[in-house]
Length: 157
Ligand SMILES: NC(=O)c1ccc[n+]([C@@H]2O[C@H](COP(=O)([O-])OP(=O)(O)OC[C@H]3O[C@@H](n4cnc5c(N)ncnc54)[C@H](O)[C@@H]3O)[C@@H](O)[C@H]2O)c1
Image (cartoon, rainbow, N blue to C red; front, side):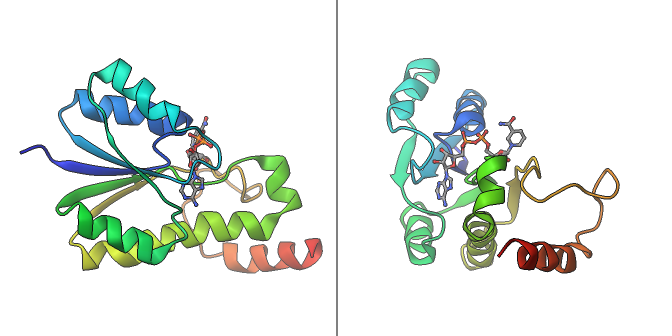
């Protein structure tokens, strides 16, 4: 039986290419996407390229119970690749709380559900473009972020 991988944001730019590569490598892929920045036609295009139609669930990763139901429906998901996020730099500056809610709560929901459903692995894709300029690269510790984040939010609001 093929191993199952959940790809959130799987109809998006990077997600859709990743789905094809996973399928070509022999995995069964389940896509979750709320289509906020993509189109359901992408599922057809993935099928055209790989010859395999991925499972597609239209769902918002902010919906904790909806995610729980997907994990119950598709038992035995081995790992998650998490691409479902907002990433437009300009909009993130205008609407920081919208971005923090979408990007952080989606991740927290997945992390909270993983142990319940026995999922051990997650790959989180982030270009970090929405979280400001780090003092140094590579960013190794996130310890400073809560303070800096709060200051920045207070400046903006
Ligand atoms: N594009 C790049 O060059 C690049 C490089 C490195 C990392 N990344 C990161 O990879 C991730 C995906 O980037 P992308 O370029 O494919 O973006 P994208 O907008 O094309 O794809 C993101 C997908 O996630 C979906 N989505 C957003 N919020 C959601 C939610 N709450 N629930 C369900 N689906 C949701 C959107 O509908 C979209 O299909 C982002 O975190 C981005 O920062 C992108």
